Length: 320
Image (cartoon, rainbow, N blue to C red; front, side, top):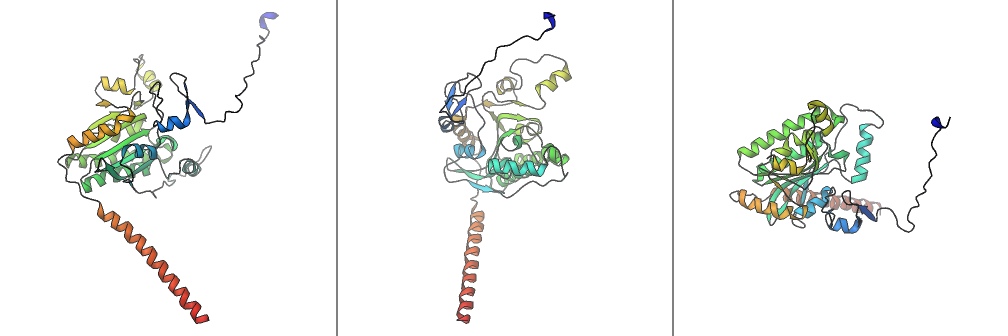
C-alpha cells in the first residue's frame, strides 16, 4: 500500500566554494557572521560585530595581560604520569602525547611571573585546548606553586580559569587538587595578599568548586558558562524548569556569585586598577634569585663546554 511506502526526498547537492581554503573564515555562533580568522586573532578572538568571545589560548592570553617581554615561565617541564594505567578507546598516555603535539604544551596550564603596568604578579592561565582544560595533578600543582610564589614574593596572584572540571584519567589524585589549591589560597588570604580569579567560557565542576570561586575579586567574561554540574543533570535532579540564562556569567552576577563582567579588551586595565587599590600596601620582592639561578645554569653550561673543548684540544695535541 502507498500508506506504508517510503517517502521520496529530493537530493540537494551542496558544492563547496572553490578557491576558499579551510581556516580562512570563522563563523560567529550567535549571528552567523563570517569573520576573517586573521582579523579575529588580532581582535583577541572576539567577534567585532556581536562581541562573542571565542576561547583564547593561554600564550595569547598572557601576551594580552602582561607587559611585553616580562613573562618568566615556571615549572614548564612538569608533565602528568599515568597512575591508574588508564585504558579506553585511547590510553591516557596517548591522549597526553596527542594534546602535547596539538598545543605545544606539557599540560593544561601555563604559570609564571610577569609585570603588569610595571608591577610583578604571579599568574596561571588555563588552556581549554589541552584535554578540555581538565584539572589533573600537574594543573593543581602548578596553580598551587603560583599561589606560593605570590606568598613568597608578596605579589598579587591572578588565575584565569577555562576548564570542564577534574581529569577523570587520574581519579582521586585529580580530586585532591581541589583541597590543595584551596589550602594554599587560605595561606594567601592570611597574608592579606589579593587573589584575582578570572572565569572564562567554560569554567565548570571541580575547578569552579575550588580555586575559581575563591578569589577576593571574581571577574568573568561575557556569556561565559559557569557552574558545577551540567544543566541537564540539575534539571533531572531537581525536576524543575531552569530559568533563562542559567549558569551564565550574567545570571551569576545578578545573583551575587561574581563581582564584575569584563570584556576581554578591558580585562588588563581592570586588573591593573584593582591591583593598584588592593595591593598598594604590598612590598613586592624582586625575584632576582631566580634570574641568578638561570644565569648560573647558562654559565655552567658554557664552562662545561669550554672544558670539553680544552680536553679535545689536549687529546689532539698528544696524538699529533
